[in-house]
Amino acid sequence: MLRKINKTDKPDKIDKTSPPKNNLSPIPSILSESYRGIFEEAVRTDTTDTLETAARLVERIGESGYPAVDCQNQVNMVNGDRAVDFCRQAKAGKQAELTIFSVEYSGGLTQYDLQADAGELSVTRSYYHFEDGELKQKNTCTYPADFWEYTEEGYLLFCGSYFSQEYYIYAVNDVTACTALRVEPLDEEYRQMNRKYILPVGYGLNNLFLTDWNEQDIGQLDVYDLFDKLYPLVRGETVPYRMDENLGVGAVYQIPGEEFEQVIHTYLHIDRETLRSKAVYFPEEGVYEYKPRGLHEAESADVPYPEVTGCRKNPDGTFTLTVNAVYMRNNTSKAFSHEVVIRSLEGERFQYVSNRVIPSQDNFDPVWLRERLTKEQWEEFYGEN
Image (cartoon, rainbow, N blue to C red; front, side):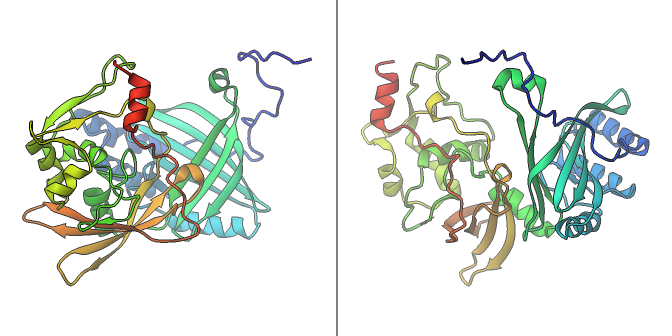
């Protein structure tokens, strides 16, 4: 006889939120004191979510002797040698403990208390938020890591699951928690290049860095997705051509050719004929047909993020960036690597010249990327709406 599950019931299973074997210290009061001055200043200047504030907080925590990094791994870890030593002992099957902090970009702070024994890893994660002049604990959980690794790229990765009453009511499942903490430092020049050339486009909702192409053969590049990604960089505002408020209606726009081509040509040197052949262009009216992505073309939120790990200058004046895709959800600090050729222009301007995915049998497929609807699919979903 089948038993009906009530979502408000707790499942019959081990509660993974039980305390760890050893009682690790709660967040030291000195960290709350350290946070106060920096965060209150950030609130006054409206800079709580900036890289600069995160870097200051990471540095201040480091002064207390703890390893710390920001949650997006954009700031080099402080006291990373302690994390490296912990990983070495844990890998050797020894008993080891480590407390490490991750700075959020909204006044939050995550504390990870890690305990290793016989190659196994136990994680206690506590989240704090700065309120009323102090860091207040909001939640905590403890779980065994189903997977953990210190990678060749210098990342500490761990992943596990734990029970949450609120989440179980919604999903009838445990919460999966995957964490990626960059331990080894990156050259600051590489970080700046990443923020300027790669991060603004990234791997989500476009395939600029996911497929091989060059200026002579743009291959499978989706020029509509590129328009979406490049428009804010060129025009300084979000794309005004949006899907209809009624999700059952397919929005269709006609964009002046000069506007569409200016956005693309600012960052890619593609001849006009090629560009028009990759889109729906009406020469009589001089416009491009444009259909914004709709509900049926939404992507997963689990998208890798890029890290520039190398740069070389080319004889023609261009330079090639080597980039790794860090895919936290799939427990890898190198889902794939690719090479992006950049051409510098006057001032701070530049153009993308080519992209090449470096072949490897370990490369992950871009399962998060959802192709735009074909003409037939679009008609099927929206019909005459």
